[in-house]
Structure formats: C-alpha cells, structure tokens
Length: 120
Image (cartoon, rainbow, N blue to C red):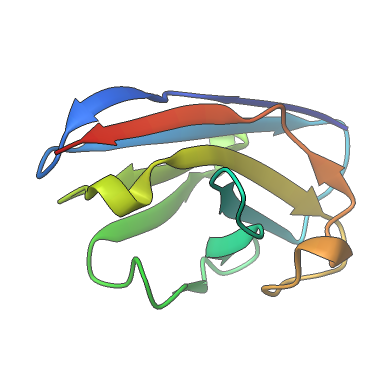
C-alpha cells in the first residue's frame, strides 16, 4: 500500500485548508486522519468508510472539518474550516483493509505526515 498525504501549510486563524490522501495497492475499508502536536498524543480527527461513505469526527473538529472521498481517484480529502491555533500539528492519513474506528494502533498503513500551522 502506498499513501501520499499533502496539502498542509501555514494559514491564519479562521481560514481553511484542504488535505488530500491518495492510496493505492489494496482494497480499503477505511481511511482516517490523525494529528499530533509536539509533546502530545496522536489524536483522532476523522474517518470515512469506503463502501458507503459513513464518516465520523473527533470532538475537537466536529462542525469545522469535513472528510470526503473520491472513489475514482482513491483519494480522501479533509476540508478544514475555521482553523484555530490549536489545530497546529502534523496531520497523518492512515488506511486499513479491515478496521474502521478511532484507534490509531489498529490502522496498518500510514502516510508520511503533512504539517499544518495556524497562526493567531
């Protein structure tokens, strides 16, 4: 499985960014986004199930972030709106052929991470 995550950058608070995660090489059950800030634990952000588009979010991003998929491109997007300085972190996409949930330890494949920095 190959994963490529991109789209991070530096933005001011209140603005938006869209992250992309392109996957290839294996039939997938789910793609998830996690993030990790310096000195903090890896945090669940959002996940989407490929078969039917079912999705759910971590409490800290609910109502501001939206996860979606493009089946033809095997790509998952994370639209991040109303960004806050607390959203600053390295964002990782992860995929698995079986698991669909919030436990990062259960995802088998990980992208390289993309930095998101939100200035106040």
